[in-house]
Amino acid sequence: MAATEKDVWIGFDLGGTKMLTIAYQNDWKVLGRRRRKTRGRDGAESGVQRIITTIHRLLDECEIDSERIAGIGIGCPGPIDMNTGCILTTPNLGWDDVEIGKSLKKEFGCPVRVINDVDAGVFGEYQFGAAKDSRCAVGIFPGTGVGGGCVYEGRILQGAGVSCMEVGHTRISSSSRSSGYKLPGTVEAEGSRLTIAAEAAKAAHRGDAPYLAKTVGTDLAEIRSGALANSIANGDKVIQDLVEEAATAIGLAVVNIVHLLAPDKIVLGGGLVEAMEDLMVGTVRETARKSVMSVYRDRFDVVAAKLGDDAGVLGACAWAKQEITAREEA
Image 1 (cartoon, rainbow, N blue to C red):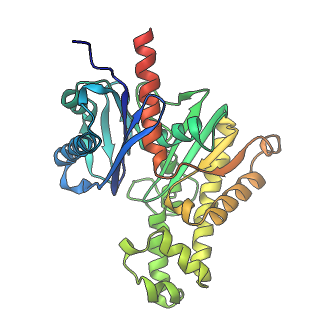
Image 2: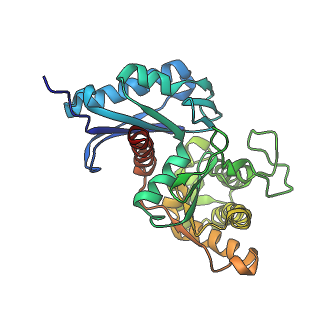
């Protein structure tokens, strides 16, 4: 009997609130997709099992035999040991030292590559989206936190076996505001959606954001990107000011990155950018260009991501395919 052709690649994006998996053929044709809630605070063990179950359900729905899987790429939040495929820590999920790579390899019997979720998103945009044909692309994705990633000449920038580019935990302000990390005044403390939502809730409570107060209230869980965008569109000027302040903080982070790496493309992604693209991208671009050294001013552009939710899944899968194929050919 002939060996089963391994012609399917699985991409997986583990987010703070959702998980998305997509099955691709070798030519990147989508065979099927499945989305579920993460439920990260239930614990790492149940979270890993939920990932495995989600992939199995996708395979069943698409009638794909697991023996056809050539490899799995998964993007996960937080620092990753890229040699062992271990999630070192995920502050927003409460997971530490989770050997997700070994678990998936054991379950599906195929090679697995684990990378940071923002690295995955940036690699997806580098290969297929807004950063295609760049020499050096840096991604910044503001959400509950602020993630960062970099692709340099086709390779994800990383440390000695560990993911890096923790842009959100770099300090850009003398503010005492904290993001839950001991260092105050960080990009995440000043520029995340959670920070905007917290200040917006105060404004709504004080009566300074009447549309937000009427439609959403002061519950942080309900003050999401779309609600902020609607609030601005309906005249809540104080909310626009808060978003611009956050985008300015991210712009200062871009200044630091430009001075360190001189990337030709800065990609902004995530729900906050999708909901208010002109405001976010425009403010970040203006802040960065007026603040960098003059020699760098016209050597980079700030753009919005193009791939939406698929960026992380596609990027994780493309990275896995690149790494696994290169190893097989070596």
